[in-house]
Length: 325
Ligand code: ZN
Image: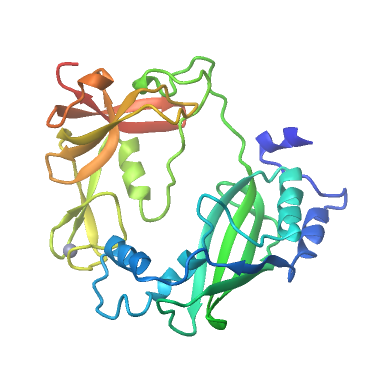
């Protein structure tokens, strides 16, 4: 039955068209997803301080209290994993996997705050499978939205709730890549037929990809204060204005910084290869491939120029050719 996955199909319908899988999934609503979870650390100032630095939040209320938006951070399992996950949650996932919905993407979360968390508070939490949607067709593929609600307590008192929604789906039909096709050749190869990861295109960045299709590298420009920004964002970080237009990059730039990837080896890439942080002549920076130069000849300050690389029939990417290559 797994062969249905590649066609984006979900198993589970009977001839009448009734979605039997949905009936089965629905039975999990209200069942626990996590029971008696315990935060790995008590609420503490170092984690609050790091969070505030990462967010650029200089509110003097912190770290005497924790930023409310840290709610989920206190419940995270880290690399060693979560505690308290239930068999019911695993069963729900197994049902979805078995029906071909093998892919997962987090779609959104909602939080509600009831009281402050303060350094020293011990975190406990429980989560429930709150709802499973009917089968939905999305741009990613067909599947089901699963919402869990986590109640987070500090010192035994409810501090907030965290609703987390995922889409478990059957990946859409894949376009065949010709064996030994052009995928990832810019970086020297990769496993034949392996496809480069697809960009996430949404309403905030669709204009950028429209530009790429026309062989233009578009930079957003705030129409209130003229600040340029990249990557694309809904608003201006300098003045907060949501109004913008675009300017096309000249294509000239330099390598501002770079890393050479050795590990991990992704199927569509052939390490070692250089990933550059390119400073465009217009002043903004973007991450891209540096082509035309061996990975060990890429250096800070290397002049580069924009090209568009046809990766496969569905994907074209802006890349930068190093001079002297
Ligand atoms: Zn602005």
